[in-house]
Amino acid sequence: MAKRLLTLIVDPIKCDAYGHCAEIAPEIIALDPWGYPIIRGAVSGAAKAHAEMAVRQCPRQALSIKASAVEANRRVGSTRR
Amino acid sequence: MSGNRLLEGVNPTSPLTLSQHLEVHGTLAVPSTQANASWSEAMLAELATAGLDGRGGGRFPTATKVAYVASQRRRARMVVNLMESEPASQKDSVLATFAPHLILDGAQVLAAIINADRVVVCIANDNDRVAQLMERAINDRRGLKERSMEIERPQGRYVASEETALGHYLDEGVSLPRFRTTRPSPVIAKSRVLLVDNAETCANVALIARHGGAWWAKGDIAHAPETTLVTVSGAVQTPGVFEIALGTTVADIVQLANPQGAISGLLLGGYGGTWVSAAALDAPYSVAGVAPFGGNLGAGIIIALGDDVCPLVETARITRWMANESAGQCGPCLFGLPNMADQLEALASGRHSARADRSILDLTDVLEGRGACAHPDGVIRMVRTALEVFADDLATHQQARTCGRVGSKTYLHLPDQEDLF
Image (cartoon, rainbow over all chains, first blue to last red; front, top):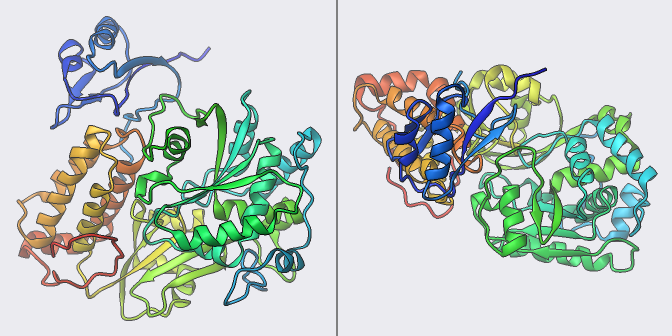
């Protein structure tokens, strides 16, 4: 059976760069120069509890965790040639 | 072999009327208002056999998209995307000008496959000429037994033609993209699931419905195999739209528009497309043909760049225009694209720091995949390919600040942009 990845997804339209998420789950969330979250990799292990808390604490309700093989926020590898 | 299938038999001065259109292409029988499962299945199979892909720029297999919409439980609605929001594209307007009924035939076929309640033709609110032509064509068909059709006029801006933005407009009158957490996911407006297809895609469906998928892909004695519409502009004397057989070399296509002077590179696909070197002139114009040069076909746009302008200046111009066209909904696009334009303008005009290229490429990595729609990703693709294809110009700028070609001349059409160069 294929292992389903848990992925943290940012709705970039809702997100207003409060930045709480990156403080709560620094293992998987970095901030860009303007304070908007960049998701680094899948949600796993110890990071899971932090990710769930980040989802709950987001003032804009812009975060969600999805179990899927396809990621909406494609951050796996660069397409740069 | 004739190159024309979509533009076959057109008049140079006026659109084909319905009777002229039927004389050129023959009649077409489409189940009018009732669902007809066996007909739908057979027609879907023909689309799959043809291998038609989306001509709005995505080049996604049409049969797959249609089947996905058909599989939804909700009642469907057919949407023709005649927005043509790429400033360097004219092909859909040309098609609407000369062969409007081919577009509408295809829309009716697609509407019948998904048993849509009706057809909506979306035309930008700054394109009255095409809206009037399509209105007349729709009125011409009043006597036909087919699904009702109407015209909608979303905002004439770059991101307004993206399918979630069309859905948003038809739902709430707002021409802005929506975010989707999973893909594919249905585009829904007024509790209808939408099938959104580009006008040229629809016109090809009209040909497939008449002649079958195998004919469409292979052609016959009188007709070329698969054709596509391209808009050629830039360093050419007679820019325009041409219907060409897929696989024609890029050089032969550019030749149709009478190139002037030496070509230093080409922008393929659109302002969110890909730069390729002049070596790509030898490539066959097809998805596979331009791929080795890092190119994609996008919306069928070819812009030839003359070697008398600085490609970095042209890249900066496009980036600024695209930054201004952002819907402003997502932070990475709202803040990232203007910053990228600032950096490119500095590089182009010699005000840059030592490793400006590295800083720009790092920014593309930071922004990639982080918009609700693909607008920033298109700019990223265009900028990355520019820095790669024009590596020599980049080196010159890094050593000597500028290449001495920073001036007012430009080969790009950028509506309403104040020029900084």
